[in-house]
Image (cartoon, rainbow, N blue to C red; front, side):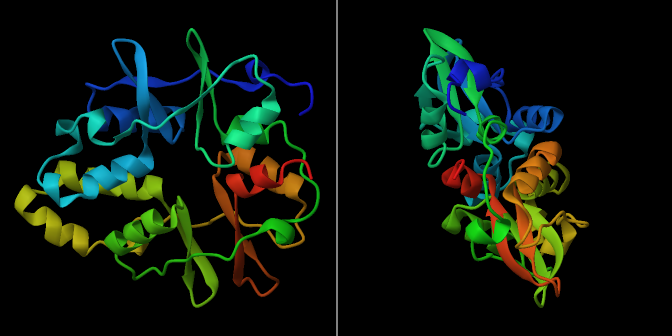
Length: 258
């Protein structure tokens, strides 16, 4: 990482105008396999929209009868956005991403962005998964999606392992929730949405065949797995296949090259 400048690791930023609809934002995220877009107004950068923000916007009762195709990006936009110069050292980007989800790279105008993926690509963490894993916050297959969504917001996390007992049976992410909320808004009549959404359970939307690691998995292997699959986090399983931890990109960024 030493010697790298931000310009060496930044990638092209994906933007969307504030006047566009949330459905278009989700389409762009899915097309480019990203979780966020920078928001512009008259080509000026004004904020960021994330899948978490979209899930929150689509889940609010104030707009409960409106489909994603009727809600503007500003409905889910966050005006807080950290900026960095392309001439800054990459170490600064690593430090900032310990508390931020994205950095906009500015040189008079927007020239790129730095996300956790760009930082992970230059890190070479030492040690094993068990050293930095966090206690897992889990969901069950029968839990209601609306309850899990609230817990995700409260805990400020983007994914939860889904367990039956202590055994891993799936993963649910803020992306899964955003897509589910969009589908309901677009397909279910307005007067039925609240009841149908409240009855939606995690097993309806979770992913299965989830990638996982062991406590003795080298951290570099965890990084390689995340980068190859564009995965934001992986559960840690013991030898009995019980979920004993969770590792996210931010966990790894916080430990750096140590």
